[in-house]
Amino acid sequence: MTEYKPASSEEEAKDLYRAGKFKQAADGFSQAAAFYLEMDEQLLAAEMRNNQSVALLKAKEPRLALEAVQGTDEIFRNAGDPLKQGMALANQATALQDLGEKEQAIDGFNRAAEIFKDNGEKQLFLQTMQSISSLKMKSRNLVGALFSMQEGLDALENPNLRQKILRTLLRIPQNLIDK
Image (cartoon, rainbow, N blue to C red; front, side, top):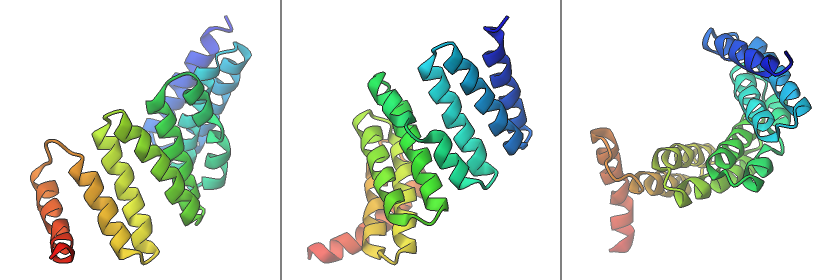
């Protein structure tokens, strides 16, 4: 009977999340993680902790979100799952960003972006570079913000019209510097 508890807690938490009840969803993901740990399912527990972190971020609880996701990137790295490792790093960076820790957030996003780029996850790479760009813009590092955004857009093979226009506009300062 215990084997059904994590799955039912997980499904209930997902339903709560979809309903916008983020704090209750976070509690459900936490329970599922605890059940998976009891069953010695480290990867599933880490996944639940990442889900818990996302729910806590939505609930405007960045400190708790950071605590929930802490260390999960290492679990995924050791398991050879770079995509989930990158997502865990991005979740940590988002929590740090919400806590006002801009430099630490940029570092976490850079590590996640590198993983996404190395694994051909172009859309996740672009989203992560946009986060870096936004943080650099808020820190008044305009050149760094432009280059981060440009790097993310340049990685796309089939950008949409808006992305093509933005990529062209971002090349203007580079072209002026090169002349």
